Structures are given as structure tokens and as C-alpha cells.
Image 1: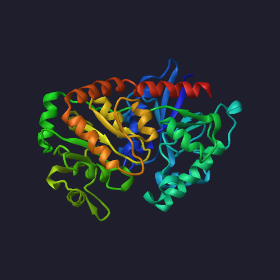
Image 2 (image 1 turned 90 degrees about the vertical axis):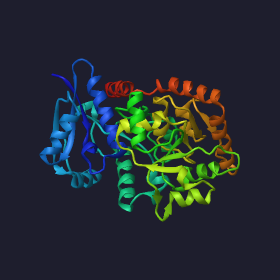
Image 3 (image 1 turned 30 degrees about the vertical axis):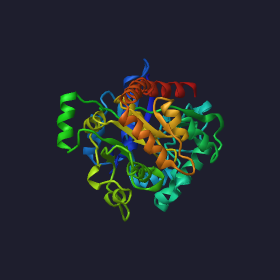
Image 4 (image 1 turned 135 degrees about the vertical axis):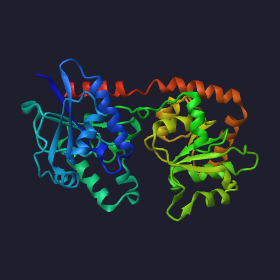
Length: 379
């Protein structure tokens, strides 16, 4: 009888799958392809329309089966928060988030085990960025995880340290990194055609995020408006406004011609590969620790990276990018100097492209999946 790892894949059919949906998709696929001999992967999904079941089955070739809960997503979310349902039963369950059936069990007796993933701590560090209901749910589920999870996966050591300041999971925490989104590649000719279709200039910087102050995008615009900084365009992977604040207005206030700044919402992995492959550099100016996915995907494309010195960025980059100290003042000036150095010195850009490509080899979904299989085996 095969050993079954039961993966919660509900996020791939959520109304807005988002980064967690991409993580779930990529990791589950890697778990299926890397399954040890005699092992298989089963998907767990909330009660959904038949078309969504078909979508999940098509998304994961080789999945053994789907377990379909009796409750729909909204009801299941509330039930798991309160521990009111026995669905979906026991076995080895792995959750790509805190959305998991966390309840009392003794794995030494039943063999049941539940592993959850903490992707971020926004509900504690920036509760104003979430709805009050979302904050309450995340905090309640972390409390349940503290009581009932057999292990907790986090993507970086930096996040593990911050988690320890909120909840003491002790030796149950495992650091298992992520990798670039699936399909992030494009042939050179196709990339050029896609960049033309997207209206991109011949040279540009790329930064991901919104105008929320902690992302550092406002600092980057201030830097690009400094005297003597090359007049290179900026492509922002994100919305063109944040609340009442608009990208063009902030650019103009920073001394940057708004025509040099372009916001793009890119969901297609091939389009993103085209955008990244044409960039002079990717800039990650965030003041605070985040997922650092923009760094990982820039490394995957062999693009020079300029990043702030947050603990997550330093850990993920491992000296493969050009680090800029956030500090308490003068950050925009330091960003301006870094951008100027990379744009005006091809030898530096070439060196950073090489270290970027080298660093990309540290991020593999197969490696992540194999470590998760080993985690469950250890448990």
C-alpha cells in the first residue's frame, strides 16, 4: 500500500490564487514528480463546482486522487479556525499556508501528522494592510498551529527568527526555500516581440510593488530624480496607484518625467520572463522583510539585482546582488548611487549578471519538494 502525502491544493482554485496559488501549484507539482518509490500525492480541495475539480486534476498530472471536503471554501475556513470538523481525516497532511485541519492528535499512535507553512507575518507586523477578519483568522490559526502542528515550514531563516518572537515553536520550525514561478522562461526573439507588445523601451529598470511607503518604491523614484542619475525608465510590476496616491504624481514630485515610469500588471510567466530579460537591472528597495520573490525571479533570468539590506534580502541574495543600506536617512541618495553605478558601468552590470545566474542555482522546486518529503519522513 503506497504512502500518501495529502497536499491542500485549494488555493489554486481560489477566486484570486495570487502568489500563494503559484506556490501551491509549483510545490505540489514538484512533490508529485519527486515522490519516493512507494509514495504518492493526494490533493485536498474544498467543495467546489465540477469544473474546478477538473481544473485541479488537469493542473497536477500524476496526482493520485482528490479528496473533496463536504464544506465550501468559506465554511471550511471558519470550521478549521474553530476546529469544528473532522474533514478531511488523517494521514500525512501538508498545507502551503495556515489553512489546515489543525486538531489534537498523537502521531506516535495514529501516524497522523499536519505540517503548515507560514508565508509571512503581515497579520502581526502590518495588520492595517489586511482586513480585520483576515488578521483575526491568521492569529487564531497560528495559535492552533502552536498547539497542534507537527512542524511549521518557513521560506527563510529571517522569517523563522521573526516567527520565534511571536510564537515559540522550538525545533518544529523548518526552513525550506522557494523558487521562481513555473514557466519563467522565454526565447530571445519571442521576448523581444512580447516587450514590443507591452510597449517597453529599449532600456529600463524593474521594481515590483505598490506605493505603500514600506516597499521603498517612493525612495526609488526619489533616487531616479536626483541630479546626475541616468534618465533610465522604470517599469513597476504592480498597480499605478495606492489609495489616493498615483504613480505619475509621485514620479513628478520626485523630479522624474512621468512618461519614464510605466506600471504593468503581469500575470503570465512568459510575459514576466520577457520583461525581466530586457531589464538593465531589477531593484528591490523594500524597507522591510518580505518574500524576496522578485530577487529569486531576477536571479533565474540572470539579471543584475540592486536590493536593500533587509535580513531577507541579504539571506536570499547571499552577496549575488548590490546591497544598499536602508538606514535612517539618505536612503534615496544611496539608491541613486547604486543605480548610477550599474547603469553607467557595464563591467559591474556584467559581473552582477554572472553572480545572479550563479545564485539562481540555489532555488529549485524539486529541492524544496525533496526536503518536504524528508521532513514528513523524519516526523
